[in-house]
Image (cartoon, rainbow, N blue to C red; front, side):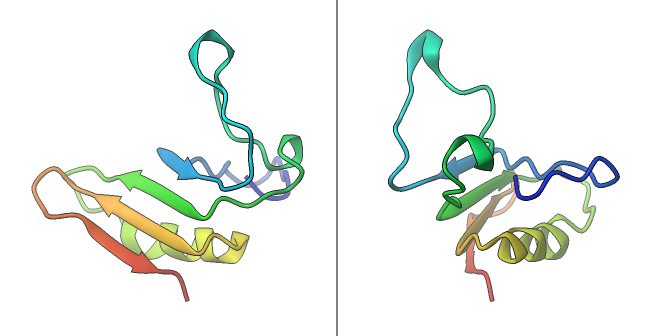
Length: 88
């Protein structure tokens, strides 16, 4: 998501909620969400399933999504409760 820069890793959440974007299901579903293919409509929510080993996902990903304009971020860890936070 965001501006494409081949020098930077892609921003690929595990799930997104994008209001105002047509939903495709079945064989015509999306393989990924590409901003410029969706009229630059930024998702409202980004969802991350985090690994059991801490790797900075909470802080680093939250900031990346906020910088893109994504308002809400939720991270889910199998051993912890769901954490939902508003991006600053």
